[in-house]
Length: 219
Image 1 (cartoon, rainbow, N blue to C red):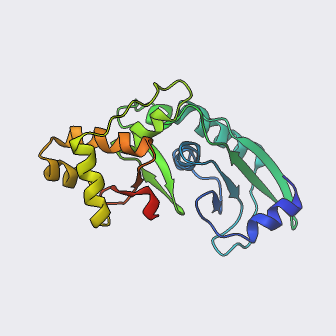
Image 2: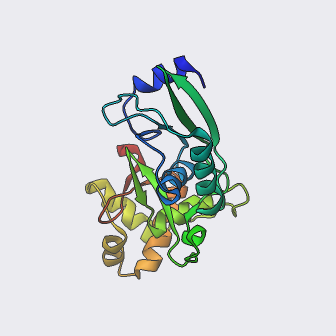
Image 3: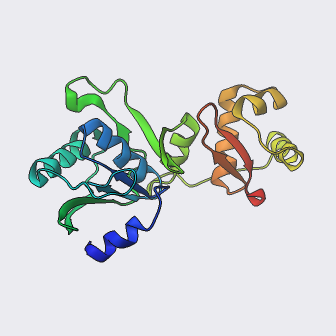
């Protein structure tokens, strides 16, 4: 990572794989972004840049790098060890973190680093330019993407055909909506929808209120 790389990043807007932060804050806040990138498609975090992209710089590189490492080691489960670069830029120092998409997903935010245990641990993902809590359906899809995950086995029965035919006429469906449509439990509806996502027939969309599913070829 060098001066020219920073120029390229500053020409972009914050989004799915890029976030600017004015300063290194708490380990928990850092861990949230690390986890969201690792659970999704990876990304870059640049510390020392304000919202308007003015260069603020970082104060104490050594202490702040240690804070980032603490966030990845003790607030992420499994731990995340990102690449960390200190880049001189316009008379200031910036800290640039590169997070790769993980093969150990899903990662969870844990408060164990604060001695609070991990009872409130949660998986996070990146949606556009935001970090959001993953639904149970998204968590299961992330688990299925691990290298050692069991192979997909799917058969298209009446319930699978019902949701595909419904989505051929309607824009979207939720787990609850599918459960009601097919008169099955939400747990069973969730399992079928996840299988169809894994088969590439459906796409899941994370929403603040409730996830929904659409046909893949309509996107």
